[in-house]
Image 1 (tube, rainbow, N blue to C red):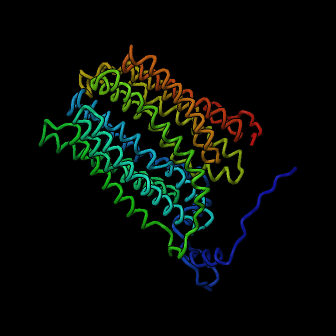
Image 2 (cartoon, rainbow, N blue to C red):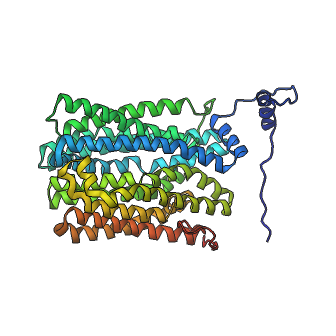
Length: 486
């Protein structure tokens, strides 16, 4: 059966917009002007993208996001360096244990909403559905408010009553204030990305927060050389407050005008989509943090500090994966909705190849000279992190080769498949941790994290190929497409 494409009809408002805006491009149209609203900024960006094509848009977005991620990566790495040198392995381990607890507690408060908001805002913006666009942001705010405050109180009280280390307990109590702040900042950043302000949407969390944290840590360790983990955590809360203020201001100035008098909310549908996303985000977050928590229970805070240096450095190596996923996410959703399988396959293949090349470039120095670099940058006390770092770098390289498999499943509406893959990986991760951590310590934790990462990438890649019909592997260019099963 021949396939047909439905072309969008041209309304009177479209004609009026072209007529009223043509003079700015040196083209003379009819002199009549219809009383129409100015199109929302996001819609104008979509029209420009349609004129310029997908490739120029991706190049611009990648260039801007690349510069932002590079600056954010440098600031984040500097924060880790300052904390490691300022607190030492033991103090850095205490900070790491507190951050692991807070990170896990923050997952339910975010409830998988950032990805959902990006997807829904992008779709509503493309269809000019202002009521739905404003509705999903307002709904996400209410969900965060309902979940974050009780969770913050619960984790603070629990840490104070259960933890033996007063320093770690105080750090958790202080850091609990950041949980709702970070959630609100991420919602606003996700909305900005859905409106195609990809770089600006990432700025509050990716760049502004670590940059401010680095500046404040420099002052803290200058004035208080004996500062501990709880005092460093207080600065973390302050940076979260600044991030949410900037994110809110930037989003408010870029939402379409006028604001609709009523909003459209698909609460049950969004809840069904958000739940598997939240479960997936929770399990993905839990994978690296479970190693830190088990090391804290079975080993020492010194061992945790060493592992956290290896983990944070490996995260820096994996930055290109997150960067490319952030840029292509809205495009994957759009191409899938349009049924443009050729361009969807092309985008996934090129993205996987770019991920692999970029991760390999960042990982190579650590694979060849890891011990020397760790000693030079973090100090001799952190040189034992080299073996764990090599394992984690190789795992991130393998992850890059599998391409944007999980993201494609989410953008195609198959969130539950991603949840299943992460659940299987989490079980494998926990089993390997219990098996290896008692004897190998932080090296065993690195093996567990690497095996878990490979497990969920393998399952998600196969599901994306079988269900969506797109092969996300980096060598998939030119391969025959299979018919999706659903």
